[in-house]
Image 1 (cartoon, rainbow, N blue to C red):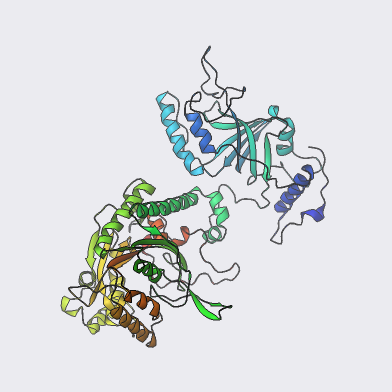
Image 2 (cartoon, helix red, strand yellow):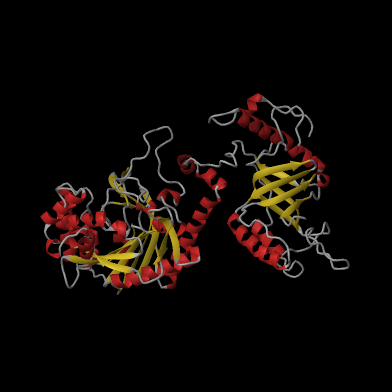
Length: 595
């Protein structure tokens, strides 16, 4: 590469913190711009194949099954196993590939680049399949848990490009080569297997094009390869770097995508219709939670970010969409914890002519099917036992079923005669160190005591059912006992995963329960619902008997990916602004996943 002239005024960069290494990389950007007629970040490279596509093709019959238009005469494809004398020689097609450089090793006139692309998660499986074939033919096994692929570049094939990218540049204000770890590159050449058995792209120039190009220069260096990006707060704030450096993180979000696809497929196959309902509401409803408030300037009216889509979805059941679901965001202005984030993803689905026990069966089937699709088994590991060993959770049906009353007797030691006595319950809560608000009603006391003493024991999938009616203002009363409702919550690993009930479709009863919510709000309970007159009006037109269910997608992904914190399964979880200090405001709830 000829001497270059760097103008210091052209490399001042962005208004973030700077260091000497970043200044050198900015100088490299300027050099790239000078060498390419002012274009430092080109957008004219089109990959023909991903690493997974190339490996899959190579592992197939190269003569009959390759998807390429024509073959190019060049080096034999397989240097580890060259064809015997007289056999037809198959040559590699020309391949264009791109990705981010994670390692560079230059040995004299040869450079080896480890590159990663969007198919990184597929490569270990492809390598494992290739290993089986290698062993069958007497070849040694290779490491399969490698998410990168290799660019092989010999100076003999394109000396100008090799020297420009990997040799020191005369007069340059930087040390080392022009190409750095972290750069995004595009290369073309021949796909082949090296003498050591590594499938690679042999970079070769053609038609005057360079064999390798820097498409995006990484001005900010990636974290050290050995130590990686270990600080948890930095990982969450800079998720883009976390995804580059940590294959395990990429795998979590690949599984999240599989969960969402699997949920939709499950419900679509059963005749459910996916819809979208408003994210801004004029009243509070669908769940008992504190809202985020905003204001509509043009209409001069207050609005709330929705805490649940329930009342809108049930309006659609009234309108004749008898099986309906929505996957979208909910917002609750509450504390942060290992299982709570103010903004989270919820699945809610409603089914006419069904009861809450029907939905127990449907939820069991859904979770077992997702476990098989995402994990390959209905047995998963989530959290750890007291001794630190991974905790095994079995997701095959049937799940255990426990009434609230039974749980209070078993884990709180309340006699059956004392279950309806608020003084007995409060006294027992005090003995166990469980704080219960003085305004709480009998039903709320029962539920809060149950949550404190029973939930940590619900490690294996368990449906908890028959909740007090006063804590479930939208659920149908039980025909046998009007003091409870036909409702369940599903707990796995000590955490609530799902909430469902047979729907209340009596407009008079619904109006009275809304009025009770307002009465509780007047007594100081901030987590209550508004009186939604329009919803009552919808019920007056008649809603068929129905049942509805909500499943927290984030917690479901935690379960199926083994993540111990909800922030690990949300790409950009809520955090205080950088430099604000004070950390996150914790929730008062414990974090049972880790224990």
